[in-house]
Length: 227
Image (cartoon, rainbow, N blue to C red; front, top):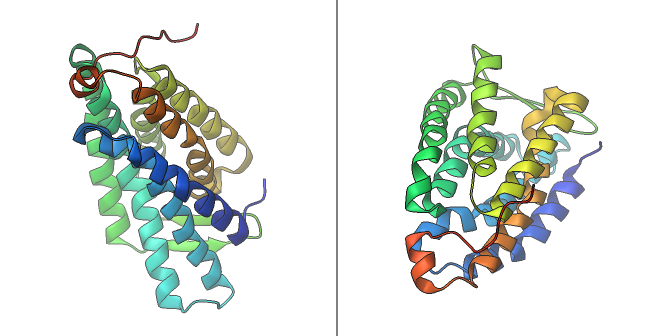
């Protein structure tokens, strides 16, 4: 498993048009958070490219420090809240209540991790195949489980097949990264999650086939989950 500045730039640049296409499918404000994920992941990878560049002296230390902080803020406090809220806003009215607990957990995790990140320092160690980000956080295992529950749990219980598979793919990525290189989790899993955001575009494209009334009121697409 080898990642580099080139990998971040390639993934980020490739996802930029995917993010634009996904947002073009938006027809209701509730769809914006989910549809924006590919573009946010693309920008996230390009930000990490600046962290890599700082290790070679291509950018000044202050730029690298700012990029590191921005990268960690999105990876840690933002994602565990953004993903369940984005799924919550798309679910049918009757199904939204089951997503609320994941959004609530995501909010708590986001607050705790935001405090840990902003309280600093954010330590960055650039290795040949990954970047390690470290923040001062007590109860690491507990908050890691809560983070995973918020980010993965909401998509897995979605009634939409494409969102469900988005959760499955990211769960597989979490397991793989956790087994192979747990120390660089924030860096490696975010690359994986960025690539999986192609499923976000696929969902938004399929969602376009729904009648306007169904899109606005969050009715289920006429497909069933596999299995």
